[in-house]
Amino acid sequence: MLAIAAWASWGGLWVGLVFFAVVELIGVATPYLGAARGLSLGLWRWLMSAAGIVVTALALWNRFLTRELLPPESWHNLGVAASVAALFAIVMTVLAARRSRRRHPWLATLLAPAILVGVLWGIWVVTPAPSAASPTGDLAHVQVARRLLFVSWEGTDLPWLLPAIERGDMPFLRMCRDGGAWGQVRTVHPYSRHAALATLVTGCAPSVHAVLGRRAYRVPWLTDKTLSLVLDGPWREGQQLPWKAWERTGGPAPKRAALWSILERVGDRVGAAGWPRYASAAWVVSTPLASDLKAAGTLDADLAAALQPALAQAPARADETRIAFARAALLFSESLAHQKQQPVEALLLNTRLAAEIRPLWTSETPGDAGEDVLRQAAHMLDEQLRSLWLELGAEETLLVVASPFGMAPAAAWRRLLPFGPAEERAAVSPADATDGFVLFYGPGVNHGTRLRGGRLADVAASVLYLLRLPVARDMAGRVLLDAVTEERAAATPLRLVPSYPAVGSRR
Image (tube, rainbow, N blue to C red; front, side, top):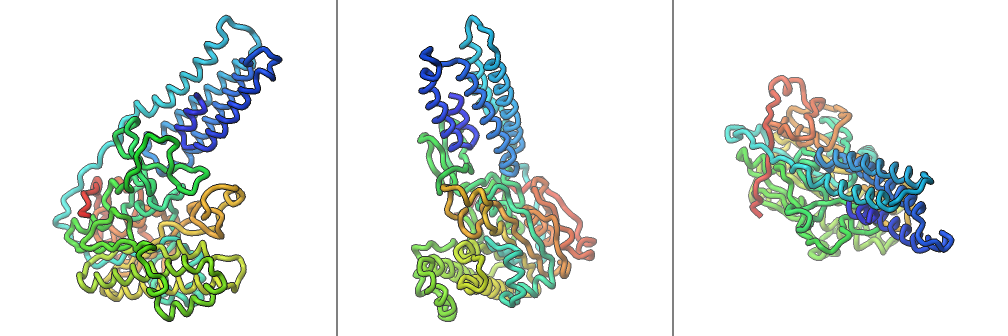
């Protein structure tokens, strides 16, 4: 029962299941080990002591792992649970070590696990629900100073971009880097793509915006609220539950307003492209599905010719590569077409090209075919960025390029495991939450400034400040003042509002 409680409570599903199986196998063999005297109470106590140590370790590890995902109340609960489980392990160890006989030896042995299981679940029952977001101040009189081009490149980072800039593959980005402020930003830990994207556009921690993963679940017997979980284990799908009494629902929307909603509240027309389904704006372009693409016919002739030598050497990766480039090209062309037909003051675009191409073609061998594919990806991203910047008004536009996460080789222990997601065994992946980057370019931005110590949540707060909009108090990020010129900082006081709660999506 204790192992089942640990299995279902702490996210260490596969550890709890294996431990439970081991305990049961030992329990079957115990009568033979006990010289035909039946179940050994002493051995059983030692096993429960080991179970308490496992529960303690799982609680502490999850507390460390989810420090950015859980609200403070739940994060504190993990510490309390670890303390209770550790006390249980000590009690069971003392009982097992004592040789004296008691009148009812099973009573204390069974009572302690029952108390532990009740306490572990009771901790969450008595915890008060997080308070709702406070209303914002009146933003009707606030005017945004200029246009905004906000571009997210998933899977890019400075170790990949800087060599591409030096090789001449990204001339426009080089101009922006030399004339703007740029640097690494620490992403969300542990890695969760949707949590990172929501943090990028809301400026809030995952414990506040409540987007933890791609999936959401309804567990009626546990809570009336929709749950969003991130659980690790030996399966390809990142979010699973070990029981059948649940219903899968669509991905959750953030509980705080994203940048497009904030800008719409002050009267700006906004366009959004490539973001998750909760995006709401004057026009929205969804990420094209692979089934909707005709990969062979949607690529530019020059690009197709440039990719052909590398694809001929690795035909197994050819289809995925064509689909990734075709998806990025179609997303860009549709966004540009919407901007020409329905011009907006703020355009927010997210593309996954680098995140899809880099794991396929990154190699430790210099000069192989993969370098040509990666260079074409860098060139495409640079050209698309330049075209959108010119379309929105060039010098009058605040340009922000950010990456919610980067790519790096997975940790050695991940690559050695015989199970787990395939991307963890690729040459590079976001499995260990590699840092992303941010670049600011435009009026009010320092020239040639290297930003240090930034976090992903700082991006949204800095964008609002540069646009002369208030920053929410419940945002986890701070304004990166090193990116702002002294003249702009002196003329723009920092204004705060309690929160930017989310509003209903129009989609």
